[in-house]
Amino acid sequence: MKNNFKIALTMVLAMSTFLAACGKNDNNEPSPAASSSAPTASDSASPSAEPSQDAEPFTVSLRHIQIGDAQKFRKAILDEVVKRTEAEVPGLKFELDGIEDAANRFTKLPAEMAAGNQPKIFDLFGGNADALKYAKAGRLLDLTPILDELGIKDKFLNVFGQFTLDGKIYGLPIGGSVEGVFYNTELFSQNGLNAPTTWDDLVKAADTLKAKGITPFAMGSQAAWVPNMFVNTIIGRYTNGFPNGIVTGEVKWNQPEVVTAYNLYGDWVKKGYFTKGELGKSYDDMLNEFAAGKAGMMFDGSWRSSAFKEGAVAANMAGKVGFVALPALPNAAGDQTSLNANYSNGYGFSSDLNDQELAAVKSFIKNLYSDEMQLRGLLEDGVLPSMKLSDESLAKVTDPVVKQVLDVMKAAGSTFVHFDAIAQKSVYSETELQLQKLIGNKASAQEVGDAIQKLQDQENAKTK
Image (cartoon, rainbow, N blue to C red):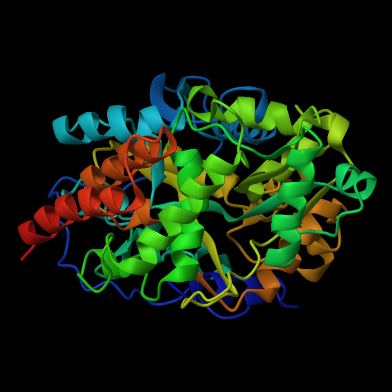
């Protein structure tokens, strides 16, 4: 996965819409348990068939995570796709179930997968801990023949790595993202600060803002995945072979480089670089603090760019936000041009479908994974496309923050995924628990690394 994102970027910026086909699967896992009753792409009629007034009504469950005002642009795209699909498929009515993403990923969907009663269409993360595990259990629909039937497989970028098992595709990333530093250009200008593109400039900005009574970094650590984004990036900068090496034993959570990364975060907490009381602040609180001008910077995913446009939750910040990669860390062993960037979130589909439901799935895929919707996702929501867009389409990007995101991607020397796509779920949960202990000054960086590695060793031993 280390170079997949850069390959994807090259293809995004390419002149032709029909360049190279999707990348090969590098996963050597065994084939998933096949369901003898699982439908194939040829089991039903084309989803574009004319609707019949006499069609038998049926419903299809659709689980999504587009809830709240910050997700309204993405939800609008989903609603349009639902409307078009219902119009195309005779008798179809979707039952939408919108829930918070962590609740879906870590609680609800795992329980449903274990029981075999997963929704027909659902938000899905890629990687060993999610998509590939469910594929091995035979719970996910093999989408390879459907992509071939619809003629869109070669229109995707090299984005299927976290969704591919034994050469078969089990999920479709809706788009990509890169994580970095959003900063308030107005505050920086008022305080004579340079854009935080070097480590010295970043630290100077933090110290200057703090001295002025302005929080350097807005942070909401009530849900530990939020600060984990920053930790993931600094570990990747300090350590070679991360995160893939954590499940092979090549990288240890308690090795000096990783402990140094945790120490850095802990030191910044003690220096007051993050929001006071961050453990009681939500992800939305983090954005609100930044948007109110009470914090000068915010480490977040590129998807947040959609919050700073007209009609969005932080529209007051339009024209006042910049985006840069985390600057190179002094004396760090990892690739300092690397980025935490990947195509890890999209949709999966149940392997338990009847003919009507399969027709609905095909139509849903056709309508959502199109040039029109991919461009809308980029323009309206700041989601980097998972499909190839023409130069003409990319020229429509006028949002300055999105343009900066594309520039950051272009400059990346390599990429790595977030460790929640690699680590076992119990290990990832332990990283969240231990990070919150670090933030609360209840554990040292070394104790954090030791605790996580102890569980990592136990989980790795299960696969040997």
